[in-house]
Amino acid sequence: MIDRLMFRMIYGCGLRLSEALNLKLKDVDTVDGTLNIIQSKNNKDRKIPMATSLVNRCIILNKEIHLFSDENTYYFKSPLNRRLDRSTAYRRFREYLWIAGIPHSGHGPRIHDLRHLYCIHCLKRWVLEGKDITNLFPYLSVYLDHADFRGTQYYLRLTADLYPDIISKTEATLGYVIPEGRHL
Image (cartoon, rainbow, N blue to C red; front, side):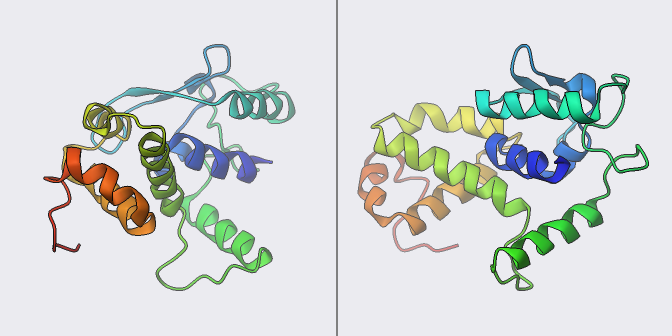
């Protein structure tokens, strides 16, 4: 139950694994439908919205696992009531890949690829909906807690590589982000 929600939350909210593992019960607000990310990679705090379906899963997990937990209990806890370990999360992720018949090489899929997918799907959705990426791009960068736009530009390049049909839609407004002829 913990793994299913944790991996969904990483993908559904674009979290880093460390951000998910460091969540405490008090950081998961099922009333407002938000996550409070405290002291993330860049030592910043931020509030992340959750989809209703994710909030509902959190409510179920709270009733099943956190009924008697105090607010400082790690949200994704081990059976010993400690923070779930990174290596355990990675091991379980590889086990789920194996069960699903998805090969795991030394290059992935990795847990962090769920964060990548969040960004790619977000950018793709914006382009297909005709949204102005120029205005939304800075919001995505802040949402992801990137120190500057370079970290977020990587996702734009991945999106363009995976969905060539949107390149023409992005070149007009963001040509300076993906210069022609340059590959990462």
